[in-house]
Length: 391
Image 1 (cartoon, rainbow, N blue to C red):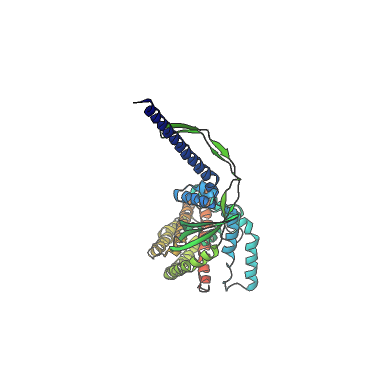
Image 2 (tube, rainbow, N blue to C red; image 1 turned 90 degrees about the vertical axis):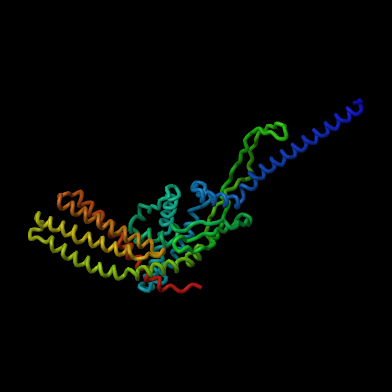
């Protein structure tokens, strides 16, 4: 090979290596641009936040899911939508009574919303729906938090799909496909998002090899003002309630009608058994004899408890529409607690145990709360029949 040809080949090889280096540097630059765009632009978009939130919901990562929701803001607006027409169609209330109830719900808005946030946070942490304590426990404010929670549909609504996200300056909107689990009613829920935080991003150093060339990337950190997009309001929550409530109300009314004969018949049985129970306990001295205690215990075990079990067995034979599941479960719980109360009472009498009698009293209080809840649901169902037909 002559010198000229040799030099020409060396020059061609040098140019080829130069082109390879330029290509590698170009690819590397594009990778850096991609990384920079991802961390400085895309991860700060509301679309990224909503996709991350939805993926967290599907995988059960409630910590990430909660990071993209402002529960306090959502709950305040949702409470107004939920209670706005709570007493509107109750014909048993006078205008003055209705006004008093509506104003009362406005006055307790802060406490109710704080309780709702606590309930939802507990659920996100434990997957358990636990009612709040304190002033919201029982009916200290004259309301039943469990019924209000069921009315909100939060316990039986599922996210199905993220449909779209639209960015509009400092605000954004997103739409989700959801479904109400009992009635399987589909709905498109629209939410408003706001950027509520400021974050920094760090890209660490790393080594990589490309086309046989080794490179070291030292890493960098940057802050473009940060972002943390959160859902702050559900824009059409009232429309969702209006779409689902007539279906669930129809389910509930049908179930109440289908079980009315059983309930009426056993109410008469329980009334007669209560009279007999009181009669068996009568004593001139006010203290039952051992024979009376044994007789009363046998009456409870042989008559009262079997009646409760038979009533529940008949109720369990009735088909329960999805919208009546809550009421059916309350009836089962009430029956179970009532039987436990009677059993504790029997132990207290026979064993002369104050602890067992205290347990019976405590269980009886639980039973009364459940029964009052059941009666309120049945009353609300009757009121719902006055609701106007929605287009």
